[in-house]
Length: 438
Ligand code: GAP
Image (tube, rainbow, N blue to C red; front, side, top):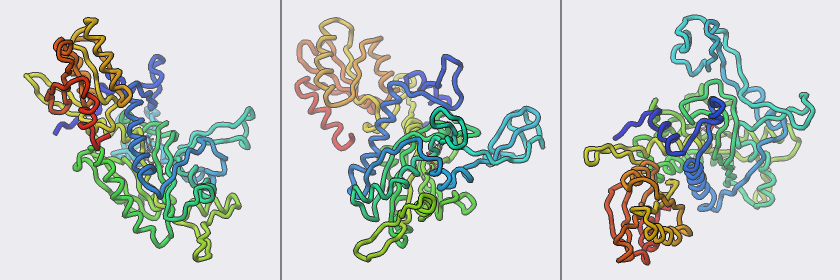
């Protein structure tokens, strides 16, 4: 098995147009990234796969898209204003700042190597703060949301009323979140602007433990169903001292990153902490009314909270492979077809007008079905190499025989096997190959 380095995947991502450093022409903005033509497709595909599994294929979860900017009270009630902090230390020799709990040796500066030069730790709040409207005073303070979850809690009563849901049921949301991380890094793993895929599952309190176990397995399986290698994914229960201020239990889905096991997703039993906190602060009754039992109660919440940008990164790492072919190294991204940015590449053997015409005809017949790419540049070998490197499952080659027999060659990314297929039956042929995978 290939163990890819961070550098290799970052270079490939940049070279092929998955991820660029943000504001690159101005020297880059550390910790922010722009997603290029292939990266944006990969993100869309991961997002779609999550939405499909969490919302479309179930009748007990509905979607939501709440505002990034919310009333500041939301973050007071949720505890983020007082407690969403990391311990910050500064080295008095080199002035570099670090997150104390992430230091390998809490007494030695990793920047300059000095010992005993850290300041006392200060609790640093991770929320980005700004002002709503033209007046810059505390009554106009707003925060960029550090999680999408609170937008769900504050809409709990709206959704219960309008979608007529009753526990156990969930509300799912995908969107940007922002954290002023002290030490962003490891490429797109930890950034200050990122995207989350979160679902709050509201359950009767006595069913919380059972649903917590259910979601642990469900979420682990999701990564495996999309092709992640089983020995690269694990569940790790949190120790009591790791639990967030709201959680009664939490486990992470972890991925074996190049630097070791690290978090992909957190699955927490948030109890009734959030609904109660918002009810108390807002004065609204956020209990669920169980008509059959004629009683009101605060549901408990089981929350699978995943990172979209982080899991797209993990899917890239996991898909990376190198193999020797004819004395050369072939780099191939063995992405699950559902995640592959381009599903089919259409490649004429040469730029001769006759071939390009047929290529356009073939491309036209496929375009309505899948995201395809037509590539007429460079030698065919280099174009195959590019498609392998970006994870395109199939390449369709139009050659000189095509002009005679109206057939094309379909090349499989993983096996490199080639099959001759009539143009008239090409859509059906590819549909068969993609069966159950898209
Ligand atoms: N609502 C609960 C919550 O936000 P979290 O564990 O802090 O929990 C959930 O975040 C997921 O969001 C993480 O597992 C990770 O995938 C992603 N995430 C969190 N901070 C991130 C960051 N700075 N950069 C990229 N992804 C991040």
